[in-house]
Length: 476
Ligand code: SF4
View 1: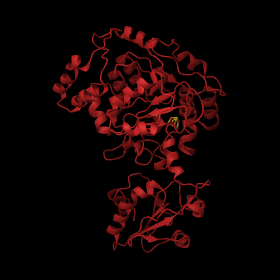
View 2: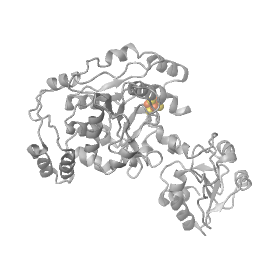
View 3: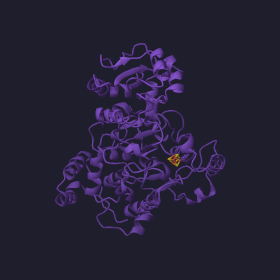
View 4: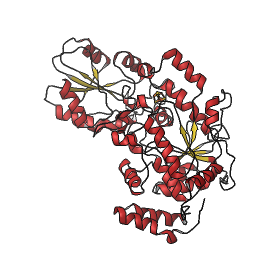
């Protein structure tokens, strides 16, 4: 590859040109970020041929570990498809400081640009870090990595169930950046057992976790066992339920890295603080290829049977596993996000601590229901008025997050004939709520219509006043 190293000042035509073309602020951010980094190594001074670029990249890539210790080796077809090129000298294994305080580092980088964060991650981990690429707008990570001028690796999980457009997009990205994506495949024996015993679409009947475990989580675990760090495209705005407090960098709470054991893997989230719209501005500005599914209304992109377009105003996670409870929408790749919530429920049986957690939804407009009260509501074949009830736990951060909108809703509905109530469903009430009230996670909102015996569960994770009001008014 014809590459050159130059200071940003000698390549200032890049951002200026972009600014002239777009009139957007990004180039200024780029210059500032690059200036803070010190030097940006431009590898595109003379455009390499695609073949030459691929060759260079192939030499720069070490294959991800083929098999997880103690597990079956990867299937023959998968192994054949995996790259086997040796590690190149120009992708150094960076000397990582023995003890890094990642909490402090995350704090330090909180205001840094994605480019700076990417540069820091690649500088720290060299060939022992890789970008996890899903085939969606996280292609921005690859663009940022390219802009650092450092060598980088990219891996992706080929579940076997992706949309054809996503496969075509992978190919386009490889050609555009002159890279080979390191695909990870599910174990063929495990897929065979799952499909032969439960069919091709078992996830619609008994939840997506089992299939995701086979097709995504275990291949990911194998990939990560060959690394010391990984880079994800998680953003706080992607899921108010599970991604609201993602740090820029963290010790991975769920997976192990090359050295094995807890704390052996570092997870970088360079775009954690970036809004989806800003990612798209960046992609457009930099003329980055994007998955054609986005033009068909897909925002979040995953496997074909489990992803659908969303309507304007719908949250992007509503397009994933839409038949399931809203808050459990993590496939297991980032399950630490969910575990955080569970940690907030301190007792071993998951019943919540109760003690010390101040009660919430405290308003005269919200009726607190006892167990007997809600059992009575359940028993009534025909109620004189509809009831809206939130099943909650006061320690749950998602319940706390909807407190203001629920109280506002209750005050709006006061005198309208609709009763608004709450039932604390953690602790010893939890088994009852799970069995009788469709509780899967907190908060669960139920409408007991006036003339229907069965309560109707609010299906969306949009918990603003207008959405809840629309639900009540359409079913009361
Ligand atoms: S997203 Fe759907 S098809 Fe893909 S692994 Fe998960 S359950 Fe299976």
